[in-house]
Length: 477
Image 1: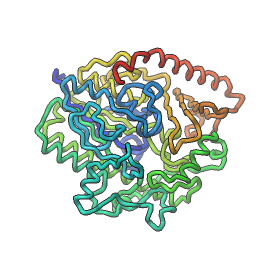
Image 2 (image 1 turned 45 degrees about the vertical axis):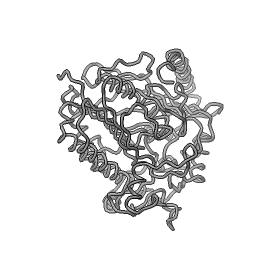
Image 3 (image 1 turned 90 degrees about the vertical axis):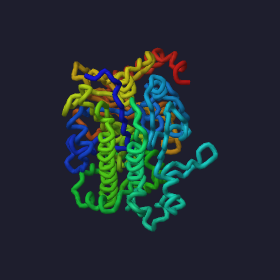
Image 4 (image 1 turned 180 degrees about the vertical axis):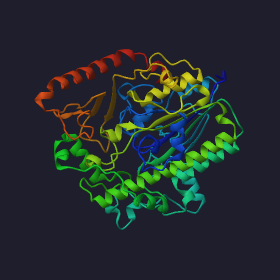
C-alpha cells in the first residue's frame, strides 16, 4: 500500500438513474468505460440520495449533513462552503471542471480552480444577472449567440423533452465538458495530490443526444414501466399536483404528459440513454488522459450521479418525488492501488453523502465529528460492513414541487414511507412484495402497525440529527 496521498477523481453526472449501467445488469446499455470501473472496482447497488433535486442533493454530498440540517432543501437555496475546503487546507490541489451547482454558480467552495458548465437550459437570471459559463463562451466563439431553443421546435409539445442535437457534435454540452477536461488534464502542469471534480450536465434534460447515437437506442427494445390508472389515482395529492405542475411549467424543455404515447415515451427513454452513452465515451477518454499523465498510478476514481429521473414512470417527469427511479443512483469506486476490491458488489443501504467522509479518509483528513455522513472505506477495504438500517430523502417547496412544504422519505431494507408535512395522506410500500411501488399501503389497516413504526423511526431520526449537529454551524456557516 502506498503511503502517499492518492489523487482523487470524482465524476458526477446529473440525473442518471441506477438502471443505466450495462455491467450492473442492464444489457441494453452501452457503457464500456463505466463498466470497467465497476468490473475493476466496487459498486454500491443500493445508494440513495439525500434530496430529490440537484442543489440540496449536492449540498448534502459536499457538506456531510442532511438537508434539514443545512437548511438547503430546494433548488435555488444558497450554499457556498464544502468539505473541499478541508482538502485544500490539507494540501490537495482542488479543481472543478464542469457542473458543480453551487449557489451562486461561481462560489469558490474550496476549489483552487473552477471551470463551470451548468444547466443545459437556463431560463432565469441568477442574482439579477445572467451567468455565462465555459460552454456559453465556447458557443459564442463558434458564432452561436445562445443555446439551442427547443421550445421553438414545431413539435415541441410532442417531444417529452427529447431532441436531436442540432449543432456540431463537439459543441454538445457533454462532449464539450469531456473535451475540456481532457484539454485541462493534458495541458496543466501536473500537480499532486489532486482532487478533481468532473461534472457532466447530462443526462439531465433536455434529452438531446447526437442523432446517430439516439438512433441506435431508438432501434432497441427498451423497458418501459406501464402507467396505470390505479397507480395515478392512489398517489398523494401533492404528487398529483406535481404531475400537473410539470405539464403546466414544462421545466428544462420537457413538455410533460401524464399519459403520453408509448412512442413518445420510447423516444424519450432512448435519447436519455443515448446521452448516458455519450458521457460514458467521454469518461473513457478522460480516464485515458489521466492515465497518460500518471494521475491514475495512485488514485481513487469515483463515479456517481446526484439523483435519478422518472422518465414518465408513475406518470412523473424528472425528480422531486421519491420513487426508486429518482432516489436510487449508481455508484462505483475504483482504486486497485488502494485495496478497493475488483468486481465487488455492496448491497447494503448507503446514502450518497457518505462519499464525503470516504474521500476525507483516503486523503488522510480528519472527518469533522458533527458530520451525519459515514465513511464507506470499511466496505471498500473488504471488511465487515452493515450499511445503514434506513436511508432518508428530503425535498422542500420550489417552483416545481409547490404543493407540500416538506416531503420526507424513510426507506428500510423492506419498506418505504413518504411523509408530507401538514398533509393527511402519504405513501407506504412493501418493496419485497411490490418492488414497482404500485400498491400504496398508507391507508391499509393491515399495515397500520408498520406505518406507526416507520413514523416513529422518522421522528427519532430527526431528533437525533438535531442533537448530533447542534454545533455544525461552527464548521460550515
